[in-house]
Image (cartoon, rainbow, N blue to C red; front, side, top):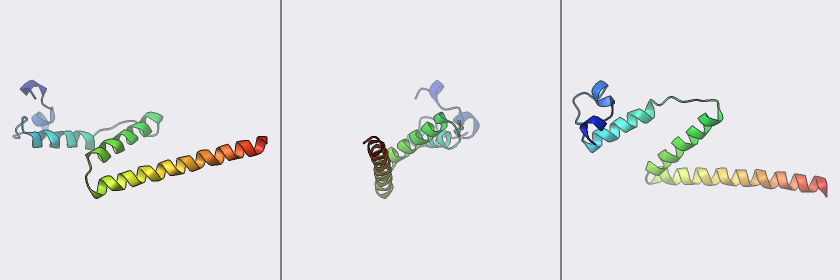
Length: 95
C-alpha cells in the first residue's frame, strides 16, 4: 500500500501502528468488517449476510471450514427437499 492508500483507521484508532505492516493491515480490515453497518431486514441485508458468511468460510481453516461446508451442505439438502415436495404437490394436484 502506498502511504496515501492506507486505511483511515490508522489515523483514528490504530495510531502508532505501521500502515505498511501486513498484520496491521489485516487487523484494520478485521475492524472494518466488524463495524460494518448495512441494511438488515431487506433482501440486500440478507444477501450481505450470505456474503459475510461466504467470506468468513473462505478465511476459515480446519474444523471451522468443515463446519461451514457441512452447514452449507445441510442447507442445500433442505432446499432440495423443499423443491421436491413442491414439485410432488404440484404434479400430484394436476394428475
